[in-house]
Image (cartoon, rainbow, N blue to C red; front, side, top):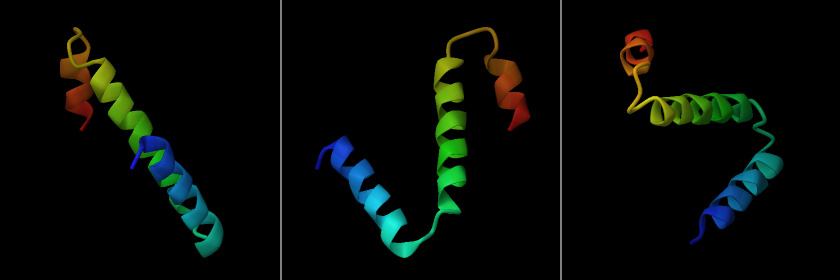
Length: 52
């Protein structure tokens, strides 16, 4: 199963079940994980990890 298929299936789940409140939670989790991955090897890493 490709990544695009997983995203498409998740989108269909949101539309059918009307659970739009999940969308902001998923977006915030993705943004936080992206931030952690980007700052993993930088000088900002100790400050980012101190937030959590």
